[in-house]
Length: 370
Image (cartoon, rainbow, N blue to C red; front, side, top):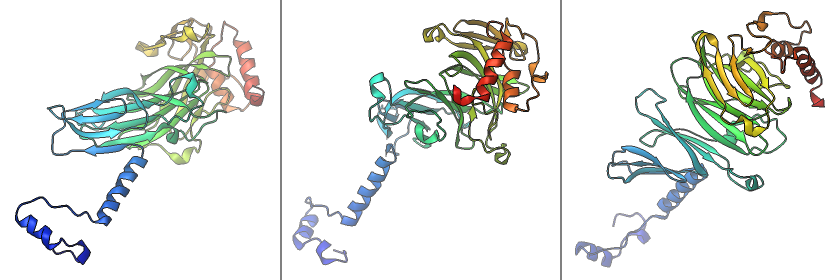
């Protein structure tokens, strides 16, 4: 009866029915209805939809095909987040130090050779706490701003949780494998800073990643194949700097690059080593890649035909440079710092150190000929 517009007031008959305790029709203002539709459309357009029921306590987080749900002690949903692509991986880890595990979900948009020409949606990564609060959500393609490869970004993410800089807090590393042409991209999420970084674009599949401790700091290490350098298997080692202590003014390069287009430093990452290991006997021989950090800086490696270790100077054992600190030897007076770095960490393949140096020198001097 108090509606300002006469047309929106109930009739005398409706008022009488209400007083008698009967059901009456509910009038919904058109402005309220329009606002609800607009808000719902915005949630759907954002990539995922959140439904909540905050009146019940969440005791667990469960994942379905496309949904992440909080459930109460009776198994009823307390909140739900709908994603665009199918969930491929779920990892639980305490990222903020509150002794409660967050849920990290990766979705996979591409799974077969027939899908590379399709209109499939992009892959996603979502991190959510037990109460349904979203810590971060990304479409993988949106974070990968530097893409030098001559084909579209069709990437499948795999999540790892590790302390990549040795500060005692764990970060989220996302290895994005391209299908079907095999480059890989490394992304890092820093929970303390709520920031994503694209660290590396590698021209070959990365098969294994881990961290090792070096003088009180953690380094990110990986095993991969370098497609351009004749499909040679390689060991890579990167030192990362967190957003809180990095100096963005020191370098304006966006991400690291691997040989032959070597970029030694970015604003937040630095190559420590990039070591050729052996020529694989086909991609099938690279399955079961393993990194085993050991004592005194020695790293055990099983990767394709290479069965051995790297010494503290990152020279393969056995190998012609075993025990030599090549980083402090004069390897070239050409003035090419990228070349000096590469040669300092170059290990001979089949013992032909001079031949390998000559080939890589020619590649770096004439990169367009590759």
